Length: 386
Image (tube, rainbow, N blue to C red; front, side, top):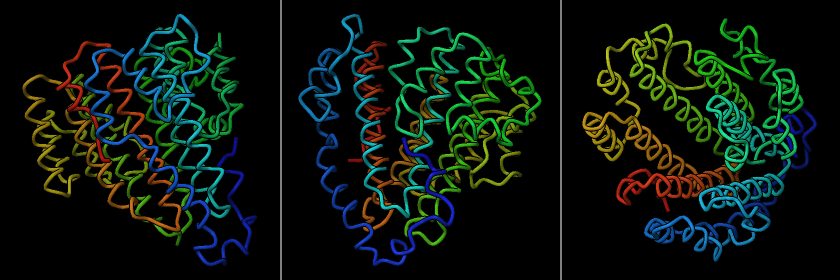
């Protein structure tokens, strides 16, 4: 498994850096173009949404690019778990393929960006352990799409003590960097071994924020100055951090947290200033946060979706409406910034994000069906940027 650290520094091939862009990126650009037709079309996502059961979803996907990803699954696995595992396998394979075909001078940037999936794995395991979920249920959500090998992920998941889990996390490239990071300076994390294995709610919140802050730092730091599409990718990373902070503030405000507690859980790496974050954290309610956060949306479409989300929140009290509005906005930004990119790292990252959205949509569909949600409600959560 390749990592960001393997590609940074002065060891890059000078000839590759100075070569004409079409010679450096021609091969990877052609491979990405060849992969695009295998993305599920908007019509296919709508077809999957319309089928009545998750068994039918699995059957539909087994006739697509996902066919081989259903092989070798246990007989006792549920239809939802089968689909979850298949899309995880497919995405991990796609991400590693993209890393292999990326030119040497940009591998570090992509490897750093892929650490978002290492962060996802560690957070998913922590949350699963906190909720006392069976290992198999959590395992279907994990994926070796970043620097972690599957056996490393399995070792973290299977740990039976605080020391064993700490050592398993530290043995990975992402985990070693995380455990050395400044993001772990919070007083609540002074006993980091125990906090990772059996966290209080305060410790869990602090850990999730620290993991995200570490990822955003890695991702932004991996982008080479002057690289084509570097600014666009950095803006997307900052937008994701901003959206996460706004949603975190809303969630904590809903639970009664004060400004100090909320600020402790803000992640680094966003574009919102510290004073603006302070105003959001100190807001008196969700509506005030929504007013302050409206500036995040720069298009009329985004502002309309956010206003509609606030209206729905007032009706049912669910923050998921805001989350979907942010997801739609970020997806459109990535599509606008990177979809037409050629001969650059942007073309590769753009495809990766489209594939990630495909995975997320399939997961939302099967989870919605498992919960018995009406088709219209599931459709509202999908981000179809096709």
